[in-house]
Image (cartoon, rainbow, N blue to C red):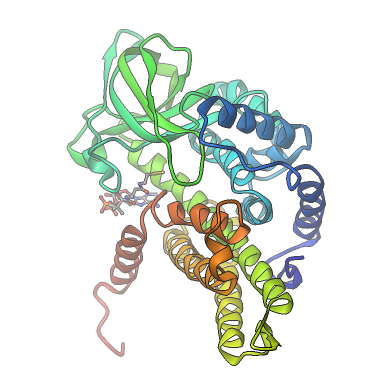
Length: 398
Ligand code: COS
């Protein structure tokens, strides 16, 4: 069982501890027995829909939206992180199903009009509808300012043209938050965000993309897709701010998902080193194995400290930015988890390479997290910009 002593850290209150404990029990009962899905799109979609339904009925998706709109109270990053860590410990796909309900509504919760909040949030909180976040394009992933999808005013509507790719829940989602160029200024200052219903004429799923750890992912095409102007989030030209403020909340939670994978890898490696014998001794009796276990445990605790520091900072910031803290948490936790999982594979030896072994599955699950919602390289740029910006004008030693 995962170490839960971190819940005693001062970042948390009793409600957070209760959420983590209750979700852990629920996931062990409802999610752990499920078999991992195959790459078959239909089976994968069905599994994902089931998971969203289960999470909705269990009341867990209420943590993805604010209390006034069917949520469990204030939209708290600590809750999102605890939920993602707890779910990813058991299943990467369950974490994905939960996380996308949050990411695909985060811009609405943060910037939506009252009407949009009422229309979309409660159904996502119960699992009745599925959410998606459509930022990336074939030529605009890290470089958000290069977005080429356009949204042109046409009477009381906008007409959207373009292609969005690497979209989680493409084909499953009931709505997409789409970022498009409205042209108020070049680059990042000429983007706007829209909530686009999946059944809007002109929106099609162009392809599905099979990735190493099966998750519903694909490309959507927008061809003369008509969207009422009231579906815009914030104002014209605010799209980059909408995207970055949403990522300020969700980047820490990607770190939390990585933490869940890392904790599981550590626990499995410890169990393996207690059982497995070599040269007449258990693996745990070898100092080189002990060194690996120590490195893994330090990485797990350090990642947890950065994640829950960022989450606590956001929750207590009264709407302020935690860009540096969130990027640090995502960068460190995902990179550390990759190493921890790799060490677990090493401790499992050949078994760790076998399809279906927990170490092999974690090895495939963790890789994407160093790329999506801002690559490790982008996080370094963001952290450096925040630090150099903060110190601008100050002399060394002053
Ligand atoms: N919250 C609110 N506003 C923010 C913000 C944040 N976290 N980050 C930046 N902004 C604002 C800035 O304040 C600035 O506004 P002003 O010009 O009015 O001061 C504006 O947005 C532009 O900021 P900046 O100059 O830092 O933007 P850059 O173009 O330099 O940003 C990076 C470049 C690479 C940091 C950005 O494009 C990025 O994070 N890219 C990765 C995107 C990503 O995660 N893609 C993966 C797909 S999502 S699954």
